[in-house]
Image (tube, rainbow, N blue to C red; front, side, top):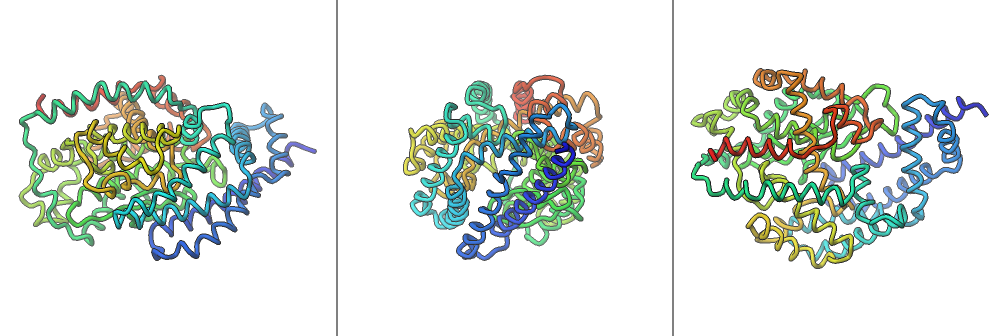
Length: 500
């Protein structure tokens, strides 16, 4: 049989698989945005059917045989097809180790778990969620052992989100974070600098906040022909192709800044997907290479660009135009300082840049204990509260503001959280290189982000998953990962703001 025929079948099968992923993704997006609260009861059977069909496509014997053939002839393949074959070989090798009935059952459990999480958070009722979380944890442990029985379970879960990442690397990284940031946080807390923030909790009508969201998408160079914005409890971004990307936000009438930075954060994710190479359309490689690299983009735009003095100065006249009563007595500098104020807080998504990685450190330590069996779902609220007091000096008054605040664990996202902090560190290193090649802050001051997006497209976005995380970082900065850029950035910024 000619290799050309195998490649054609291989490509056609990928398109069929992506069609099922597309359908499942749309259902997931709908369930988290506009679907009625009770719709999960009807969604479960549909997910069961589609998940089973998707699983069968993934482990189809003919498809697997074609991948084996391609792997045996890797040197004869073009770069894209070779990387597709390698990617699917890894994914399908793991998928085949999971019994189909367990895979299908898990998809149903995940849907139920996330639905109950929403209810439990709204009602501050962790006991309602606990048995579902127990099931999810059990599945995650079991599947990781199927995948790599001789490998530490948590390392296997980390690899799901950041290929090549290990507990050993993260332990070293977070040790540096703890050593550098904890003393800095204490210095900031002791600073006499008083940052005005009375205006941040004024009433900002939501219909006007929606106008700001549209404006920010334009500034970010997001083409709204291919990217829509929705509303949900826990903002996220999902993509079905480079021509259909969905971001979400959560509007709070007395917290306009929360929406601003939610839109910019999710917009960073969207830019990655919208600027994917055309050659990746329909390919399994049409998506970000890892959660860490993806988060490097969301946090790059949210923090390094969005919270910069130059960006705030640029958008502030528009904010005053939309909210003349609320911001009429506020200067751009006061707004800049307010959105960069640092203080220990309870909610990760609303944490300032300086304390943010401690929120991630807490989740990282808890995840290691959960997966190792040192903690059970029942133990989590108390363990969570203890670490918040230890690292941030605050204690959640209830579980909705504590252990129930994040959606990730409800859908099995163990190993995901470290990506947020690692992504921030990647972003700082990328920014340092970008500053050597572009007049970054001159561009931002003019609201001209197109050259910045172009720089990132050339080095990151267009490759999708065709390059591994370490390869993408090297393509950007021509050096291995170095967290000192991130830690030095935070020290410089907050030393200036708080006059340390």
